[in-house]
Length: 113
Length: 396
Image (cartoon, rainbow over all chains, first blue to last red; front, top):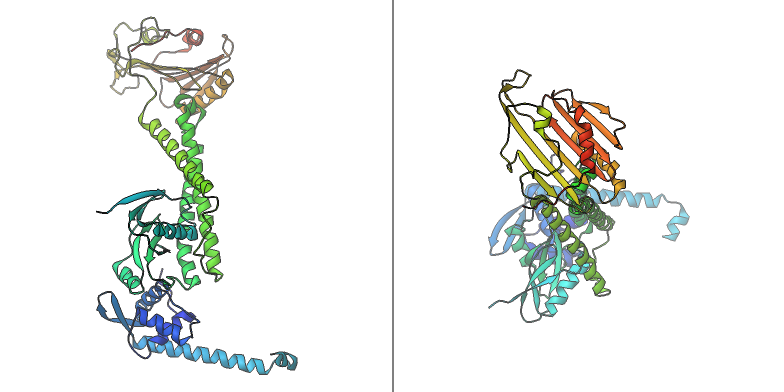
């Protein structure tokens, strides 16, 4: 059976891909970046991150650039950048849809909110 | 010099929080996990330290393999050291950091790993249930075999029944963890396993001991025969001789005490007196009537069981009958009267000359297997007399 490719990124995957947009990173740097970026709302452990990076590597969204001792550094590929942009577009569309729908809610509902 | 100690694992291997807490407790006592089996874990002694342990599901539930080196190094970057593989399903990691990052922070992703081992366990349970079903429907666990082989076969049955049940229970336990994770709940990492600890030890020791006894019984059943050595048939031994049936002057019996002409005796709880008498012969210059050019070599095997409980004689007879006639096509003849409670003659329609007699009188069941060209019907009264005979003690 062929592996299912990534159609929609999970929240954690999105932040990992976001981390690579600025520069190459190793595991601990990614975890620190995500924690800082989300004000500690999202913590990524090595088990979760390892699985995500392996999946991204399989999908050619990232590639390994250096191995120094136990530290491995990765960078985003063109395909990874495109996936990230697609995801941003999808999330913007979701947000726009939600805002449009909220404007059309009955007044009482709007007041309550 | 390193010192090692072994400890019985007091908690279920699938109780992840309890295992992690137990390992951390031992580290505080100066015992650090080195390796583990299903019941015992090996520890290295050192200065007590505060260590956090975490269990992670293995990549392949069918292989007890270490994680790949790339993963081990990646985890080291975060302060986690790989220790060993625990049971078949978990890798153990340890960290001496004060607040180490959790290894898994996405329960839904973790749920996928649990789904994998849950499926593997369910598959194993189904396979074992299938094998149990097959065993129960085969003649392996028939009453005839229980009478012949004694209690070990009952232990074997217990073993067979317990295996798939335990496997299914573990599968259900894994499924419950999977459901929790899938619903977004994080795994617990601390447990009050110390409560009722003696009971927990008992829960681990009793099944382990039962498992060892059962396994030893199964081993005994297959390796150690309860049958005596092959012995020469004493002249005074009550039996119907093959020579009497054949009435052939040039009949030559197989060497006495050898495989083809011997007596074996054994005893089990249900049948304290059991005899197997084998007689094989050949007739020079005579061939089987089926034109096969083979030398005529008849044989007669008698199995006699004197049962502890006469009520078992009937069911044992029928079980033996089913067991001995399960292959081939047989013509059944019921003999009534003659002072016996049940007597049957089975004649093979596929192998002419093969006849089997099954009879019971009181607490005795006799089973005869004859292959030859004589008719054994006239010997029925003699077979019945055997059931009432006293058998002398057989000395090697």
